[in-house]
Image 1 (cartoon, rainbow, N blue to C red):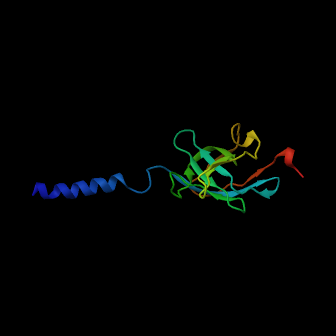
Image 2: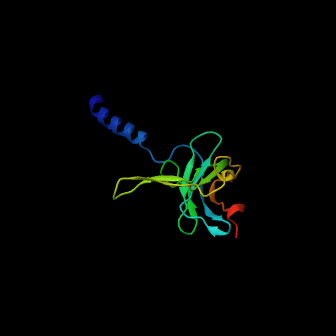
Amino acid sequence: MKMRLLPLLAVVGLVGCFSNKPDLEFGEVHGTITLNGEPLKNAKVRFQPPAGRPSFGATDAAGEYSLYFQGEPWGALVGVNNVAITTEDMFEDEVTGERKFVRELLPKKYHVESTLTADVQPGDNHFDFNLVDEKKRK
């Protein structure tokens, strides 16, 4: 009888290892990012809590983003998060295999030296970031 339960316990144990959402409190996060009033496309967004892993997102052509935690659409950890926004990227050309570099378009005050924050609450959160680059202002 005990031996019959062993496989069942093993399966139940594995299901626990691959359970869905971690036991953390999240808030769904989305919004729009603009640069000098224009939508900022292909920007990377990072929300970093004081402790724990960050959440990431990317803007589309309209400058809209949603955050993902470990690849899942759970948003960001509840609490005050430091926010960094960057356009710098590296990718591999699918045809040639060549690595290509996209240079940073934003001032350091929005990424490396960012003081941007967002106070994420449980539920739905909408954070817009209206960035300004005085050098590129019209």
